Image (tube, rainbow, N blue to C red):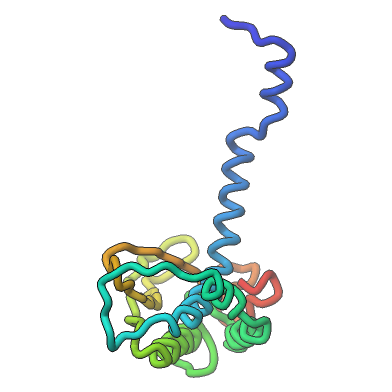
Length: 194
């Protein structure tokens, strides 16, 4: 059995454990997911001006520092607040909430998001393919009955390498403390706008 010197033991103690590193990674991943919905909309609208769908060029181009600066500063606090208020306005976005109403529940929220992506696509000459993808989630602890879960997908293809992918993902659902309470208001804007 190999013995460690005191210095080596102190060094090992001063490093976070694998569990702490894993928690830190999970926390950072969660934060990334929470903000990605807003980033998807912002990036889609920022890059819309750069896409000209009527002319398909097969060459790679570099962005100038000025263009990158314009993209980076295109996000406005007012636009972010608008998105947050719109999502909070649906009352609840619980996965099991109303899917038929035009003003309340997860169904209204996902249709609104799809419409927002379609507006962005219209502004850039149909540069986005926007569609729903759905599947049935079988009953489990937080889904007491079979539920059709619907996602919104917006794809912006590049010119130089349209088969390469950058995937950004976000979830828009919200809930109260009881994970099966599908009717109580849970605006999801008071916890970090997730």
